[in-house]
Length: 166
Image (cartoon, rainbow, N blue to C red; front, side):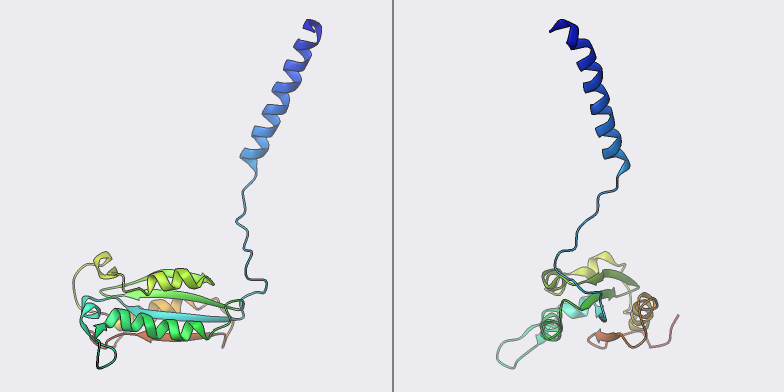
């Protein structure tokens, strides 16, 4: 067995090196199992996350909830009526500036998590709400999509620093 050990060691080392090179060279792909078709529709949400959305004065007369929670419930009502196999959801949060939060997701749970009244205003510097900047950023995100394939839903309490684009 000692006469075969040397060549087997060389062959084993070569196989291990080949395997490591292949693992280092390939780029792993994340497989998208649920949607089978390409997105033919888009729901683009511009969501106001200013501190005024945390006020508890919205909802039915009997039990008041925060404006953010009520906005989340309203958007979820719209979201539940959409076909998730062909509709992607993108979300832009705005306060003193605008930031994309979700980009073309089909996962209802991810959207629900973002719309659960998270205090996202802490990610922005303090200042006045800029609704126009949120809408402009949302429209910028929609530029590569096919014409007439998207719906823009602006969710805000209306407290804004004017509506002219800066």
